[in-house]
Length: 500
Image (cartoon, rainbow, N blue to C red):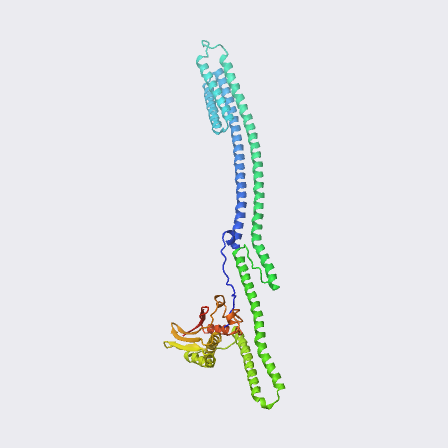
């Protein structure tokens, strides 16, 4: 009944949270998305600023051109108005008066157009002054027409002087408008240049920041992948040199984390395999050395003892040597059987059959063993067991092994019970003993090969550790299952289920 204190740990998924839970693909997606967002923000900022500069420069140039155009038209209209006014004053020709009125309307129209597009206080103030002076000029003309005769209240030449003042004021303001537009355009260009410099500086800062952020993100993602891989690489070198200690505990993407846990599991299994190999060699050395030493000693005795009268002693020695040879053959056959089963090259001859005769045969074979030790043997059958598809010789091998273990570990005067019962879907065979029981830490591995318990209760009943491994393999091939229930000090019960 090969058992062990240690079992190979199963692979478990460690809970991961936060960034560590992101796999490589999502890390790359997030990294590239962040880089794209930073690059896009820089591009959008640059495009917005360029668009603002374009609009501002276009507006500024169009506004200046239009104001200058209106200024030219105002000058032309004012000159026409003055010309028609003087001609009308000399000739009193109505056509000149109509021309004067039309020129005045053109002046007013262009003045209104210029006022509509003026966007600064200075240009609006200049246009307002031109409007006031023009209104005064028109009012003086009307007043002169009514009161400018010899009987008028004004002194001679006063209207002419006032009109000239108004005209000079308008001409001066029109000149001021051109100067103001030119100065304002220059001021706006300077403002655009300063804004462009600021935008360029901000753009360079954002570009440098985006480059730095990109490098940090790329380095972070790369290190989060390459650093654990480097650790795993170093660990594999240790494994190749036979060092299976120091399990990996990495903060890494889930894929690499699974790889690390698989590597830890592999290390545990390799370490277990090394221990099993060491135990196996120690066990085989013990199991082979004892019968070989017995045979060697027997042969030496036979060589020294040539007295024919002691034939009874020779027969006893030969019987011991024969028993030890059979023991060696049994060990070798067990090794060969398990190796063939694991390699899948052993043949199973399945046929429908009854399990009860097989159990009875195995019980009859071990009867001398339990009878010699006053062990009580019981057989219980519940219901009629249905026929099952099985290799009867292999199933017999399983039952022999379970009964042999039960006899081996049951103390003198103890009890062994075999239960055969029909269950849903097949047949169950249970073998219960009143032995010392199996420790809980050993039950998980008792069906692994070369397992031997270090528990004191088994120290005098060691075997090869192959019997239960072979039994499990046979049951698995039949599509069944084998399990054990045990309680320390109260025995163990092995149960085999074979499907119908």
